[in-house]
Structures are given as C-alpha cells and as structure tokens.
Image (cartoon, rainbow, N blue to C red; front, side, top):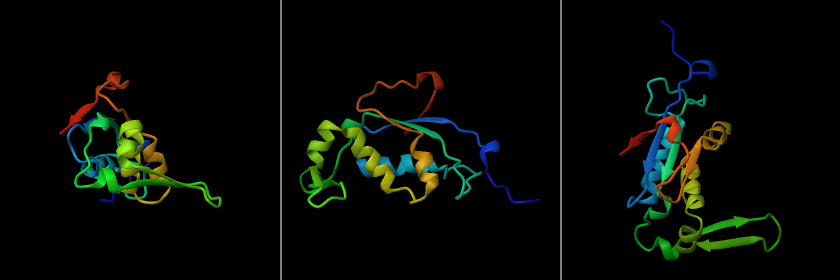
Length: 141
C-alpha cells in the first residue's frame, strides 16, 4: 500500500462556522488556523492546501485577556522613512475587528504559499450575520 498524498484532484473541502463571541482572540485563531490547514483530517499533507473553508462570526465580541487592549499595538510600515503606523488593539477591535482576527490567524500559519491560498478561504464578520448560509456550514464549538 502506498502513502496517500493530497492534491487538488482529491481534496474535499467542508464549511465551518466559528463563533468568537466571548472567547479569547488567540484561542479562536488557533482553531481557525488548524481548520484552514486541514490538520484535523486524516488526509493532511503539509505541502498541499487541503484545508477547509472557515467563516468566523462575532469577531467584534472576541476578548483580549490581561492588559492587551491598552498595551498591544497593531503596527504597519510602508517601507518609507517615518512610515510606521501604530494602532492600539482597543481601537482596532472597535473599528476593524475583522483585521484583528485575520492578523491573529495569519500569525499562526506557516510562512509559505500554501498559507496565501488558505487565507482566501477565510471569511470574517464582525456580527452574527454572514453570507455563506447556502453552503450549510457546521458550527465548531
């Protein structure tokens, strides 16, 4: 018997919904990253994009423990001198909770081209309304 290697022809993708309300941002990001990579599947192949589609709802209701709301910063840099922009997570969670969740999930994925393709299957919504009901996603506890 030969070893199974996943490729585009034999990958079956499912849809999952993760509710982030009242849960820590980092712990939710771990669950989402594992689903996007497909690490819970028996057909998991590290070099292939064999993960599932994930919808995150209630991203605005995710919590940050400790003093992270005031002490943690979201930083971007344009590459030019003086191009650093900093935003406190308190403000980021109020104005763009989807960006905070996407940054957390991206930080838990490997730095390669498989991650780039996996993040295209991530859909994040600030409230409980989402557009993917037709796919009949399963709720992840």
